[in-house]
Image (cartoon, rainbow, N blue to C red; front, side, top):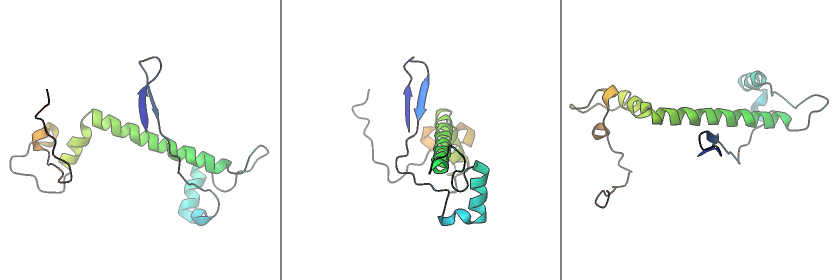
Length: 128
């Protein structure tokens, strides 16, 4: 996913690239009821039919649907991060018991967030 300013310097251009996505609308498990119904809802079940259709048209459309869904998820994630909702939600729904002096979920400060043990120590010695 790439987010960058558009040429006008005011708009945000967001794109998602999924070069290795493999989707299919024919064969495999596409005949199973749940999968067939999902493909039907998206309008891509089976081989593309029609006077101007090409082989793979439905698979390309399904790949576009998946890409659009991923892009929507990425935008939602960025909005949650920007509004600090992601951290607050994680603190509110944390499965581990809170420490006795933990702040309310709506008033989470950086000091109350537990550090992941896999995170490296960052030095602030030279920071200004």
